[in-house]
Each structure stands twice: as C-alpha cells, then as structure tokens.
Length: 222
Image (cartoon, one colour):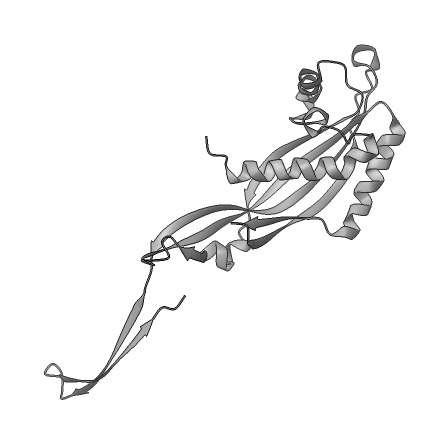
C-alpha cells in the first residue's frame, strides 16, 4: 500500500517531537514504545498496548485538522507546479512535474508524566524552540529542498485530577500549525522544438497575400 504524503509528514513530525522533548522526560531509547499517534482520550490505552505495562512518561501526538491555505495557492508550485526531470532522458517526450496543494496542518502534542518537574523542563524546551525557528525540511526526490514552517501555539495544563479512578498524571498540551504541502507528480508532454515563421502580409482583407520571409527554430537543451 502506498503511503500518502500527509502520512509521511506525520511520521516526520513524530520523530521531531520525540527528539526535541523526549530527553526532558527521560525518553531516549525507543520512539515506537515512547510515543503514540493518537487522541488524548486513547493515548493511555495505546501506550499500554505497546509497552504491555503501566507507563510513567510518554508523548502522544495527534493531527486534529487540515485546512487549505488559499494565500499560498498563488505560488508557483500551487498554480503551475515545478518541472523536475524527463521521464525518459533519451526521448525527452515527457517531463515530471510536481504540483502542491498548500495546506495548514494542526497538531496537538501531549506530554505525560507523574513528575511535574519533567513536564516543566519539556515546557521550557518548547518555549525556547521559538528561537530556533522550527521548520520541517523535506528534500523532494533527494535534491529539491522544501521548508515547512511551524507556528507555535499555546501551552495548556490538561491533567485529569480525578486521581482516585485513574491515578495521578500531569499532562501538558501544546499545539502548532505546520505550513505544509500535499504533493503529487504528473507527467506531461514536453515541447522539444519551437518553430517561428516570419511572414510579410500584403494586400487587403480578405485577399491577403502572405510571403514567408524566414523560419527560426528553438530546440530544447538539457
């Protein structure tokens, strides 16, 4: 099954969040067992299924919405796409073009711990992240660089203090919006040669007489 481009972005975001905030919570061993992609209501169940035990610290991430970004739709990649390479370098009959739909993807990140100091350290790390201008950098086809900027949001305490039923967990939530692209590739016929003819037109309508003066050819170069 082919993975969607948005799903690939989700995977990159999970790794970025775990790398950035995992050390504050003491999570540096196994991302698969220390982070889950799930809403807050399901996170405890999901992490327990992964670890097979009650968990103390972990991170959960969830993509809660995607919306079109109409302002960026007027960019080159949004309107016409970017021509990258020939499908067949020998015939040069078709060229691969990448087109992108600009989207804003909103993510929620939840930090879970029974230790409030660890939550506080991770929160400070999030605040200081602003100075690094966080962005997701994707190299399309291994060589075309695309920057997806992350706009940081608020930090909220969403702990459930009904400790008699669930036990005490401190849960800090922050969110950010990613200026992303949903990319797709298309193959289109190429123009390998343009022929320009120059004519001299004489006479009166509708009895024009056109005389060919010159012919100019422009051939594509690689």
